[in-house]
Length: 309
Length: 298
Image: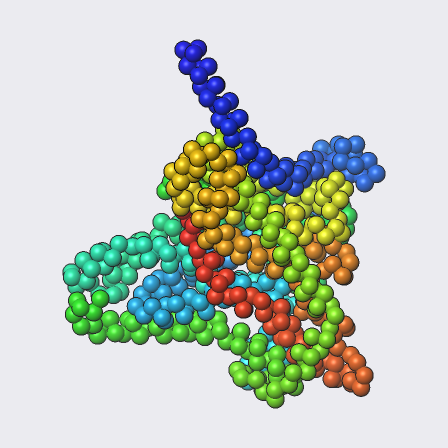
């Protein structure tokens, strides 16, 4: 027994010495993660402190949950939560099903050239930067010279100030995302559909199934498992709205609809220098995201054996 | 598939509907892009008066001249190219080193490393603690390295590359190299890498596009105009509507200046997206490949 253990220990230490250069190879990567990802986590403690630049991270006094309480009692708290979740749910309701429907349509195309053309064209906007995308949206929606208002003008509609109208914010956000990412988000689904066993289609054809029936009974069921997993993961990110696009689309007049947690943290923390308070807001959000992703991953694993890790 | 008999009437209707919808979608995606290019070479009066619908009207290159004469655009271009080249090189080297090590099943402690890396996907320090640590402890504030170091490794690309090493390169080949007396690093450079060009192309594309389109780090960490990447320069013009550096000049009326701004917006969009446009077929192919490899979990 002991000789077995010794043998094993010997083997392990032998592979460690044999693979010493592999450890050397990964050392910079490990250092990168420790310094640039884990060191900031050490800074999270300032959510529980009153940070002062003079005293630094370590010596600033502890204040417990003071900043969290202030945030929960803040008049903006519910607005931020409502906007953050509202945009996410809108996004899921619209931008999630469209790529699936699009993939089902593309899968029905027999002409290879047409299929390729559709995909090349619809993938294109995915590669535009966020700044350019928001720039396009603003140019097109401009009340004085924008294409959309020019078009509405033909029907005698007065110019609409889209970008400064809070009730329009979510729709502009979500539909510009559909335009940009519909094509590329469908890649995965198109791949799943391309992997469906062709003999299923042949058997269905021999049985006299129409194209509609083949779509409903073969293609749709084939895509559902992937779609469910993707949906579950989207719900996991419901409180995790990215900063970049919202921030660019935000202006003083649409703020009641466009303030989300990430832009609020930026505003309070980096522009307002309320470091500890905004660190607490950020931590609150991170913890919720963390819990959600764990829950969602467990559900996905139970349902289909698919998980992120 | 037509040898199973003639298409039924229902099938013909069905096909017509499918092709029609997809054609409409294509037009919906393409139309704004064509409009932008047309607007960039049209007279601003045509844009403002709503006379421009698809093809350019009263063609003029005044706005292009203005933009190309602008120093900020060139500075932004130069900076973005530098950040892209330096950043992507660091990305690819670091990712290859990490991914190859993680692909080796005989590496003791492999699972711990994977755990350390993937945990950062689930939890991070958050904007403000990260900012203060980068600024006060790592000295990255207003430091050019902030454009390339914090994004040096993407966990997603690391996993994609590791999956490729594990599935596409037979381990027997590497074992043969070990028997010939190659060290691990030698095996990586002379056996694995020559077979890995497809995946290197994929991750290079992902990193390069991300660098070109990024503005967040510059917004938070950079202070001086001369360090700004192109995206920050065009943000000022497109989003903040600040074109003071572009318009103006001798003998231009205020109306002229206001008008030309309308064209300049579109020119800026075209000019800043040009590199992507040229590389598009290449970029597209590799992005699609990346999704496929990513879907196969290692």
